[in-house]
Length: 235
Image (cartoon, rainbow, N blue to C red; front, side):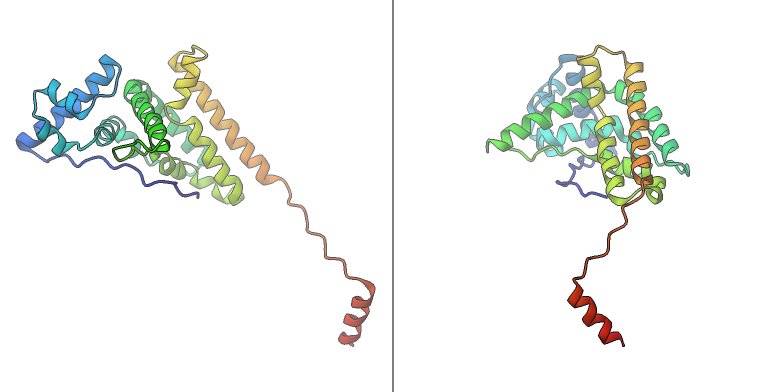
């Protein structure tokens, strides 16, 4: 399978108990509320002010917006990332994954859109040499989809398997919501159905391509003089 270009952002470890754990949760819940209700990604300072927590304390838990958003998404999608079907059918694993996780994408749509927004914003800043914090790196879907299509591996040529993996990563996540809701005006249920239909079509295409017979390589042509010499040596 293809490797990721960047190391994924890891969420800060929350304290286990006591005042520190409560403060961590307060800051995290506040950030999620700001994203959902106010429609923007808060700075750590804004989350601290809204939570009535000192900036110094907030920055100890979340040293950057990237760290804060990483924690928000981890909290939102934690159950999704732990799914690991043991279904022997790769197609059925993909179906189970889409059916079980797209409702959660819908539930936390605002937070997922915010994460995508931050990633795009930081890409532009990084490209211009103006990024002043560690970038937020997405990509947990790669591992999740790798497990889902694992049973299909024996049926697919390696290059086709990788292409299927890449293609499914485009239709699994918040991206179908952004395109199909914002441009086409589809409802959530129709977004889910369309994404699953695309996933099925991609699997069908991958299997069909792998079933095609590979061309048999033609033997290299040998000129007459070399053929005669080779035959003489064999005598």
